[in-house]
Length: 309
Image (cartoon, rainbow, N blue to C red; front, top):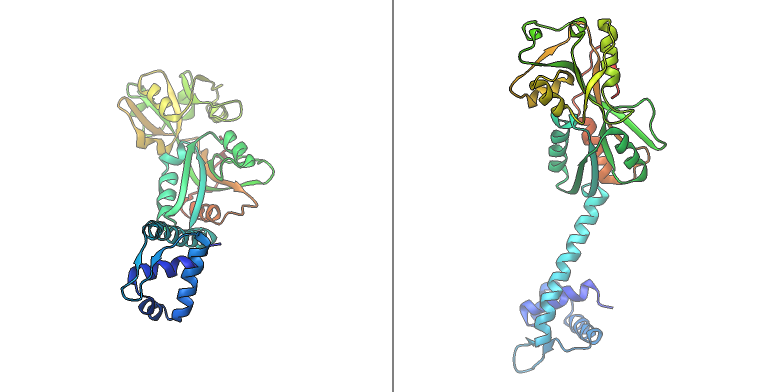
């Protein structure tokens, strides 16, 4: 069995082409060097060196080819050693991350990825958008390692989450709406308008938030248009189809024809949480979780209701 020490000795000898000089440089006995090279040739079943007492040693054709492979093998061993040590410290490996769209608009996703890449550049990331219910399923079955989600009252066995961001809700209005002239919109002023709301499935969406808004305003608020994301909701509002209740961060994707206004008597907020497995063993995944929790930038206002869509 060839070992790394034999490879290192052969590469060193191939550089010097002189047993005594190589032995002196490596601080070993010349006899030990000679024995190791002979053992290597025996293990391979091929002669690597042309030995001549009257001339300098040279590499055989097989030795030339083997030298290239030996150097490559040593480089790979060095890399394996380095990556193994990095992985033990959480600085190498693989992290699969799920996220909701709002994690982009709030900056949580790009800020966390940027910070983690600076701290652990050798960790490979797989990042995919998916809604909260799907993320929780994928965390349970091990498909993803971490999720940026809307918090829930209950989580699957072995999964937990911590809130890291909270933001207020605004109303997105068509630019020709009479309400664009007011400083802040009262819930009651939205009676009779058409609502556009993201509603991903029966348990994920903004229908409940609209219902609470309606109760504050004294009317029954139901979404007339159900869409897949906030950007689509804002686009439809800009086209005049109705109004949309959206997180504050969506203003970064403002479009012509839409105006965002605060709500004067509706203080519900939406939160983003970092979800992960309780018994996470991977050092690099634990490192990413720590980074996400540090870069969440959580801001909460006392006395406001947190929604969980």
